[in-house]
Structure formats: C-alpha cells, structure tokens
View (cartoon, rainbow, N blue to C red):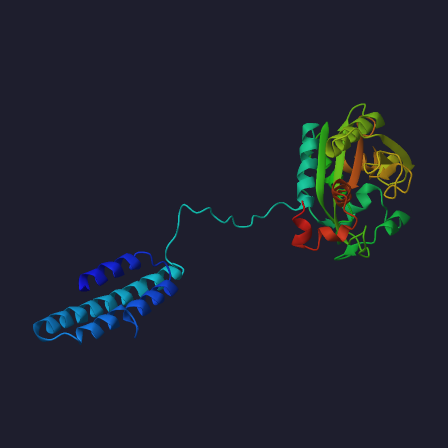
Length: 333
C-alpha cells in the first residue's frame, strides 16, 4: 500500500511543470484530506506489529515527499527567474544602432568624386582670412561698393572670417604653376539672419580652371557634366549675365529644374530654371595678383552653395534642418 502511493506520487510528479501544479499535488498528498492523511486513518484501525511497521513506513514516506516538494519548489522558482549570468550564444543578436554620414557630408563627398573624375584636385583652405586675400586680391578695393554685398565678421581691421571660398584662388595660384584644375570646398561666414534659405555659416564649393585658350564653352561643358552626374539625369544649362569683381565676363548658371524637369513648379517659381552658382572668366586683375600673365593664361572660376545642392537633391525645404542635429530628420538619409 505504501509502495503503491510512492509510485503513484512519482508518476504525477513527473507531469508537474509549474508552481501551481506542484501546489495542487502537495495538497493531494500532504493535505488534511490527502492520500497520506487517508493512510494514517487506516493505520489507526490496525494493532500490534503491523500498526507499528506501517506507521513507520508512512512517516518515512511523508518526510520523503515533503523533501521532494521543497526541492521541486526551488527548482521551478529558479527556472522562472531570468538567468543573469547565462548567455544563449545561439540566440540572434541585437544590433546596436549605427551612425551614418550627415547628408551634407554625403553630398560633399559625391561632389568631390565627380570633380576628381573630371581631372580636378580637391584643395583644403583656411576659414580665417586676411582682408587682402578675401577682398583686395580679388579686385575689391577698400571703398568698393561690392563689399556691401557681403556683411563680414571682422576680427581685426585686417583679419576676418572669410565670406567666400574665392580667396584660395590667389593663394593657390601664388604657389602653383598653370595649367591647373582645383575645387575648394569649405565653410564661409556672413552676418545673415537665419531663415529657410540663409544661415550665418554655410558651405561653398569654389572651382578654378586655368590653362591656355580656356573659354566659357569649357566652363559650360564641365558644369553641365557635374550637375548631370550629381542628379542622375540630363541637365540643361543656361548662363545669365551678372557681376562679380573677380570675373569678367561674369554670369550665373541656371539649371533646368530637377523637381519638374523644366516644366515649371513652385520650387522654380514656374520658370523651369533654378539659379545654382556664381561664375565667370577669371579677371586679369586676379591673375596679376597671383603673379600670372593675363595675356598668356585664361581660366574660369565658379562658386556654388553646397547646402543648396543638398536641399535640391533630397528635397529639403529649410536649410536650418541641416544644422539642428535632430536625429529624427537625419536618420532619413
């Protein structure tokens, strides 16, 4: 009778998978109306050696079952708790978030790659400039009205934060002999109020090509190929007359609107064209400032705003978004 209860208990214990099932089993065997309580009730009816023998076996079984319950209870509780020191190396990992390049940096690198494929070198430059290189060497005399076009951050009377990347034209030509082809990307500074299309700090890309017999046709071919590669489609170019002290003649290249393919839209003000840069043939005064003979060498120079390229490429309607550092915005690129 005792052995039958032990075997029955072991069979039922094998099916226990959680604490509730274990508690139900405990009540069924050790409760006031459980199996062992029923056995003790029957043993009371016996006499002599049989009563003593069965009583001893029943007490041993009660103690055995009690110890089993204690061990099983601890086992199930441990299984329910997370294992802090245990690592399942077969489980799929959780990838940490990865950073990526800022959209401005992405476009900057693409611009550099395109121009390098066209034979241009990328040149670093300084952001703090002298008045001479930023203005005078580029045909801006002290009292020239064109200086009013660029509201400048002056540090001293002769030292300033550059208003354009053009100073590097003269600096580079002073130390290098023609022919040459360079671009100069970098940050420039002007005292502009911040709005959707203006910032006091922004990026420009300066370009300069000097050789013999260079013409406007060379410029139009180079800039047209650049924009076609950048936007991945055939781009039409037109040149509008303009004025810059360091180029003569001066012009502003427009490209067919990339938003509407030149059909006219809100972005291009229904003209089908977008203004992209300032450019022109290098002024003889600039060649003389650099020590070149304007009778022997010709060249073109151009400068465009990198932020504008980024805005057009990714259809961003506010330049300030590029500088806020908002990850919700930056993760889109």
